[in-house]
Length: 394
Image 1 (cartoon, rainbow, N blue to C red):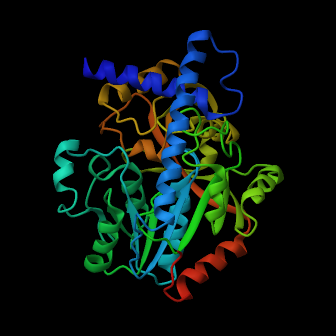
Image 2: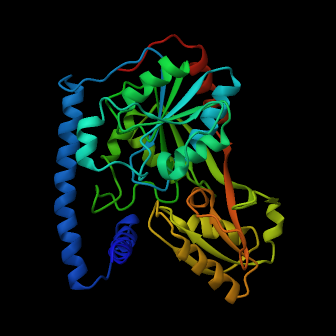
């Protein structure tokens, strides 16, 4: 019964996300849906007011921003999901570690397994943060530590990954216990409690700001004009001319350095054995997909661009926690359709229960950031982080 309710909730969530995600997706809807959208609009006005009050309290000093005395790089966005923060976080962490910095990534660990809210109320101050990686060993799995933290820990030897809702506490722990001198705040644009040294903001060039509405009527987490706080803006998923998006960004931020990049497929790996396949393996292959991410179309289209024939796509809500029956159903369906492989994303793969044998190959697509233009801006930011004095933003 609980799984049925959860599935119904996820279906509703996925349906609403499709309605609010892009301009025009909410047109020509039946009367009942338009009423629902009107209700969501009312809630978005309340949300916008709450966001405005919160930032006012931080600007006036009524709510305090805590400095930690070292470099804190915030990587985030003004929209909900789908901009590709994890690969950008990875390239920053990898580059800074190569420059000799002792890096820790601080994450909230979204949708990980947690204690009930009533217990967290009394323990969140005294409980130590979760250390997914201490920089030498991966210590926690994705269920406990969270999908993105576990993925980052697995791909970044030498970089610590610390999870806690209170990122000030997590940062202090990383400095004192792990000896870190540089902190990367994953999904940190809205986290104002910790003072940031460098503000990195991601904008999806294919859908920069959705339909222009705040959550839950649109995908904005705060007004677009707040992008003026950014020091560097990563335009992600760049394919073709993005001048219109650049012009829109310049309306709100005249000075930030802009880096154009694309999320480029890097390799194919078996979900369980980690056997690697060249991307050319997909050429002419019949595939099915399984994903639980914010923007599955980009993933599915990347397989098509690599030459795969995608015949069936199974989509779940973002951060869906799979059970064995769901994976087995997708594998059997793929085999029944004559597919050569079931392909998923790296973020999904860390949530798969283990199978010893499968009726069809189960592979995940590993993605990396490719900087198309603005590499000098990225290098400049890295140099500022590595060599500037320990001043922080107000």
